[in-house]
Length: 335
Image (cartoon, rainbow, N blue to C red; front, side, top):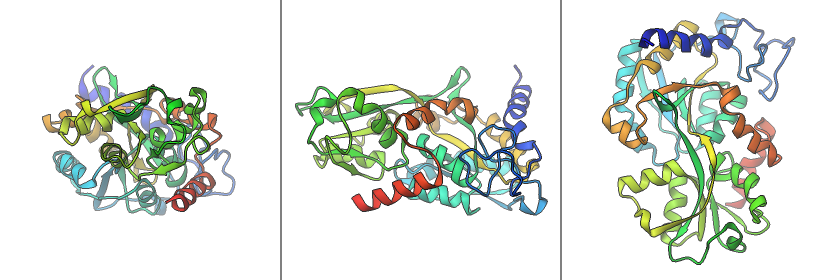
């Protein structure tokens, strides 16, 4: 398929829900699901509809972009620099990379209108959809499909652990309450492996995946639940020696971080921006950093994030405001 026709087809799928004129802020909203009260989902695609009131649409002179802070935000600002330059030329807008220090800060930035498009970690993607009105449209991938990752439980090679059961009573790090691989998947999947978080061990929140890895490396933690893509990326960069670690658990595959735009972007700008994303091809530096991915691959939040929502629901968790606030408070109390 020619690039332009492929992009056009992708835009038809991704933009169909966004183009529906629905009463986003109206009391007569026919469906909202887990979306916050200021959003509406009249077409049942599980993401916020585009506002029908023109005064609610945003057409910023500067597009603010960021990427999930799973590692040092400055690393990603440099890594995405070729793309942000391209996006500025493609949209004829100024583009600014906005460094965020936590998943919560990224979500709140989009909700408040300070962030227009960005990459969200797998778990926080669902919170961003429901709390901030984010509309996921792509993940990193190749011509054959999009990238995924696994939840890994890592420990130092010299530790006497061979299974999750061996971690009872040990110092085990999770990343943050909204993280899929760093918290929600362990909460849902570990009990079936004979290990119950917060019962068999006290959850220690590190804040980020790289901090969990480095904490295991330094001996601050006996083990940690981390995303495989972050772990292997750190090894490729020389931040850690992969041979110093052992992997004692590997989960089924999850979709990797999503790219999502704010639901209230002016439709012409939004569609132009999506075209720019889908036509872009990663330079060597980005391909190396992202495991060979060379493009933004189109996805559907409703379909492709179903496994993430299923894991959350299996663990008794929801991706709504009350759950988000409760987990944030819990993390603050623990730390």
